[in-house]
Amino acid sequence: MSAFIEPIGRLINQLTKLPGVGAKTAQRYAYRIINMTEDEAKEFAESIVKAKSEVHYCSVCGNYTDKEVCNICETRDNSVICVVKEPKDVLAMEKAHEFKGVYHVLHGVISPMEGITPNDIKIKELLGRIAEGGVNEIIMATNPDVEGEATAMYISSLVKPLGIKVTRLAHGIPIGSEIEYADEITISRAILDRKEL
Image (cartoon, rainbow, N blue to C red):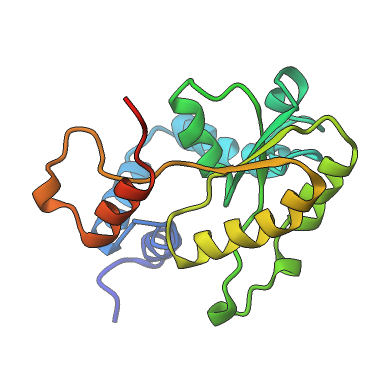
């Protein structure tokens, strides 16, 4: 028998479906929601429903938007495309305020172990954008793990023969950290990606 009455148990169960939300956090969230005023609870619920109904993928890059084409695709330099795994990676890149080009969201990476092939992610759409012309550089910004590297190499093998520059984000020792605590792969990438001073 559950320690919670059915409506609270159901709410906790739904909240645990969110990434990073365990049972205790879900319980805290559930009690916070229950303690909201009726108006606050309705506004909270309506914001979820509204986001779900209004947010969709940009028809050009695949990032989240509430319009047909996102603001980034409408206003930025289309000659440089930064390729990322998922929409949250666009947000991470934008926080740096350095990149002035546009994005292409793959919605996954090639992973034979999980049965994800090049046909399961948005590579054809990227090639379609390139075929339209005007693209000078593709920046591969997939994660520096096995799947991310394999995806970057696969896309590079398709794009380089088209005469388009393909670059990869540099990887290495993070600023503010100490070399003695870095793992071998990080140090190896830092040596390979070294730059002249």
